Amino acid sequence: MGYRFFAIPTYRLTEAAAGPVPLAEQWVPDLPSDPGEMEQALGEAVFRDQRARDRLRALLLQGRPPYAPPGPGLGRAAVFAQPPNDLPALLRLADELDVLARGQVGERALVWACECGKRYAVPVTLARQVSIKCERCGKPVELIPSRALGAEQLLDAHQAAVNSRRVKLAEFFREAMARGWPVLVCTTDAK
Image (cartoon, rainbow, N blue to C red):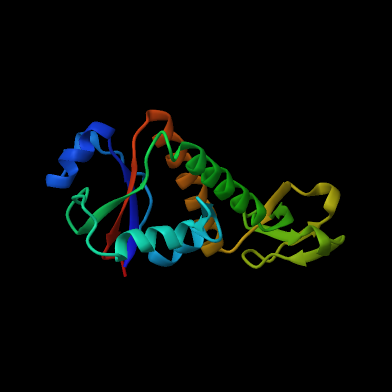
């Protein structure tokens, strides 16, 4: 089971209790609903003195939430945050998600490229002046720190996806609060 956040105008909350809100009046962030990544993205982030992921679990698992889902294949929804009372807490959560994403950016590495285009990255702490043979074309590649093309962060694909989700969630939370729209959460059937 995964989770999906979405926002609707406040005046639509009463209609959402009776049935689905028109798609034109919903704002659903472009986020995959992978349950593991969503829970990792929320991590230890706190919303109103409670871990955000514990809050969304509690909202969705206790009884039947009263709002219609934003689309097919989704479970019923519950209000996660509603302005104006939740505005400061949701903005703090957005800031916390940004801090978590920045704190797990990976190790800094220097980057070189062979004539054939094959790229090589070496963590800064391990970078030494050395010559290696290109895996693709066999030509020598001089790994001289002063001649590096630049630096980038080395990060595994899963952590990069989690950090990307954190940044997108933070943007979504800020935009929803700027619009004055309640943020709702629903379950998905993601495997």
